[in-house]
Amino acid sequence: MDNTNVKRLSLQVNLDDFIPATEKEKEYMVTMRPSTTFFQDGVARLKKNKVAMVSMIIILLITLMAIFIPMFWPYKYETMLGMQPGKPMDASFNNLHPMEYSTSEQALIESGEKVFPHLFGTDSQGRDYFIRVVYGTRISLAVGFFASIIVLVIGIVVGSISGYFGGIVDIIIMRIVDVIYSLPDMLMVILLAAVLRQRLAPAIEGTPLAAIGSNIISLFVIFALWYWVGMSRLVRGQILSLREQEYVLAAQTAGAKGSRIIRKHLIPNCISVIVISTALQIPSAIFTESYLSFLGLGVNAPMPSLGSLASDALNGLSSYPYRLVIPAIVISLIVLSLNLFGDGLRDAFDPKLNS
Image (cartoon, rainbow, N blue to C red):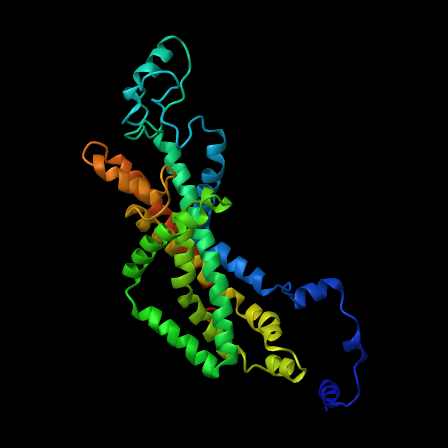
């Protein structure tokens, strides 16, 4: 019989098989993947989405421009350039076209002085239109961001209470949500804005809130009263699917209170869905503020927003169409970029889509 076959069938242990492998053999035989967290995996997937990354860069650029340009721009959004103290009004500053100078500015240029150009011209009251667009972008972004934070907080609180406790609490909350959903959305928002605008103005007079303006505060109140229902339904659905998990039952057995279970166990496990929904809520809030300002129910004059700038441009639409086109393009660019970035976040961080 062949000795090779005898060795293969032998019960004796071959000690050569237990010699420790060298480092090169380990690298060749075992390829270890570095350990990553859920957040790191999501960021890696997000970076591969070129559309989402380009949208994020556009949002950051617009935000940085809206924050920093007013700090060094020589013109102010509320300043009427034709109004000089002790001098009659200079009407040549009104309705300037892009890169056009008034009569007095042309005289200064001819005398050798430098005059900063009006990139987008001026409006009918002689105010620099570029800085008004930039400042209107800042207002629209700020309103959209803070309104989304309000919706986030109210939606999480109401949705988590409804989903965790269930029973009669869930029935009452869901019937309130159904009633709000059954009412015409845009009509109720316009009615609330009109009523709150008149009621809040005398209430905040003489307080620090007067600097913000009754219209902006009324926008925040509208979002607090109306737009939390979508977030609450989303959070409720997540809580209902998580509350029967073993770690929740273990926390209940250990005597943890419902508020602690919600804060420590349930909300952290659905945070990715909440963040995605909030990112998609911001463009909706910006669009709502824009059309309310377009109807005259938004920010207080002379403070501009993109919607109020578009509304003011209707008076001279045939002669100065760019005054409507510019804020419309900015609104479209912001809303589109935020929506595409929100879709990218959903694709990257939603575990159901990656399972």
